[in-house]
Length: 124
Image (tube, rainbow, N blue to C red; front, side):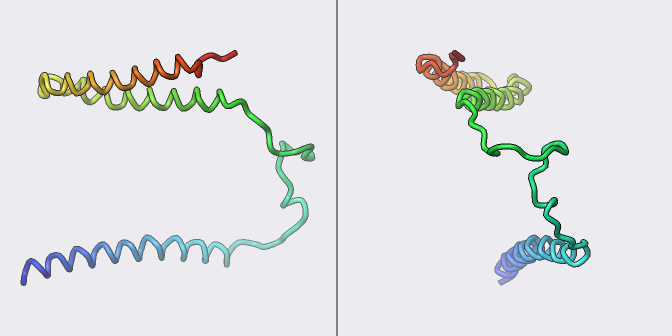
C-alpha cells in the first residue's frame, strides 16, 4: 500500500507541474493584455522596412540550394557534437565504442557520397 501512495504522489507532482506550466503563461499573457496600452493606428499594422514605405510583394523566392547547404552543415555539426564526448571518454569505452563510432561515421560518409553523386553540393 505504501508503494501505491508513492506512485500517486509522483503523479500528483507531475499533474501540479502540468497545471502550473499551462496556468502561468495564460495568466502572464492575460495580465499583459490588461496592462498594455491599446491605441490602434494604421501605421502600426504596416510592415517595417527600416523606416521606408513597403514596396512590392513580401515573399521572396530563395534558391533551394541555400537550404540544402544549411541542412548539410547542421548534419555535420551534429556529428561533431556526437564525436566529442566519445573522443574524451575513448580510453574508458574501449574497442566496442571505436567500432560503434566507425559505423556512425561510415553512415554519415555514405550520406555525403549520396549527396555528392546527386550533385546537391554543386553550386552552379
